[in-house]
Image 1 (cartoon, rainbow, N blue to C red):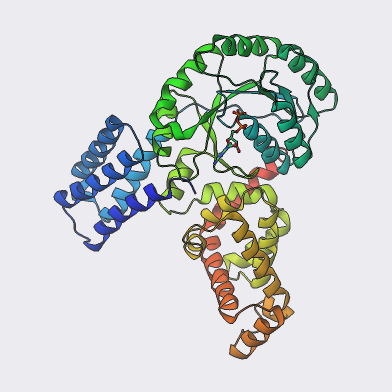
Image 2: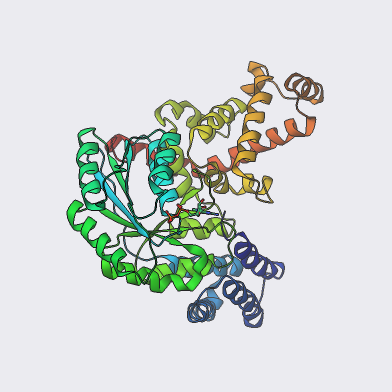
Length: 447
Ligand code: GDP
């Protein structure tokens, strides 16, 4: 997850409070100083930092007498205040199923726009949407080939015209053709130039008026930190920017600044670019992001992600069992298979606190996939009764499973531990899963 360092520092400050159950104002002030420092080091605007800690302190003073668990209340107000800071409070555009949603991407050269167009197409394609790409960038010589290659890689329809010099004509023609092909998300990549070039803004406005996109997404290099505020404002003045994708946030220390600066422009951030790979796109929702940043469970987000790939109905039997505290290795096996179908594994694993602990040290998505695949191999070496929890796995069986799967004993043990973590986690989220189920029944087509 991005901004790990910030999350760790804030958590460390909160953990210190935990040591002394009955802490007083001076201790909370000390913790707030550490939180302030962590935020400033992440380039968050100094005024926000001050306001955030003032609000937390005020809450502490107002409620001190009635607090039963002070640490929890402080933690909650840290979550609330950080969410407030990173939330633009504006709802982003909702894609409509079965309709041609035309999405125009704008941004400065080098921000990662072309790469992000393909990541975005891939993200939605994996969720079952028919997506397509148009190259309306006639300015940069390599852009046609770059997008064409990416479209081939993710296998989505592509439209471009290497001989046409008018980007407006390309965009209009492309939308017409792809609409006829029943594309549901038509993504237009436009030229990115330098901020000072007025032609960039003129061209952008012309394409915007000609195709009337349903959504205009501004792609911005998140390593610019607080400077993102001015850029986002400039683009918002030129065209109706609906939402923002911040790129290059992979481990960048200025990420906190970029996020809070964009939120201040009231443009919702919808995704974060977290690497050069096609899957390195994290959907962004302020509260989920903050909870995961602080290593807290994010059940709401987790349920949404799971229900997108797991057939809730077929899981009914399992749900009943989990309610009774029975989540077997077979259930884990089924869930791991479903998880492998999901877009971004990192996001999902990060939502489960126990699993996150296991993968401490931030292992890469590829490593996580390998780990799940190995777990599936281990489970293949288990007997039916072991998978169903009918027979206990003793030392002798551990040895047999390890030998059969070619995996060390500690890996088999780790897997069994994971099953316990899943049981505990899922038991807590059962009410939300049931909610999800009834919603799906009421509105089965809802995206
Ligand atoms: P454009 O000029 O805005 O279309 O930018 P490109 O899509 O060509 O990207 C410019 C460079 O940034 C390329 O080397 C990309 O691989 C890289 N890039 C794009 N997004 C990310 C990201 O989220 N993280 C990192 N580390 N690099 C990125």
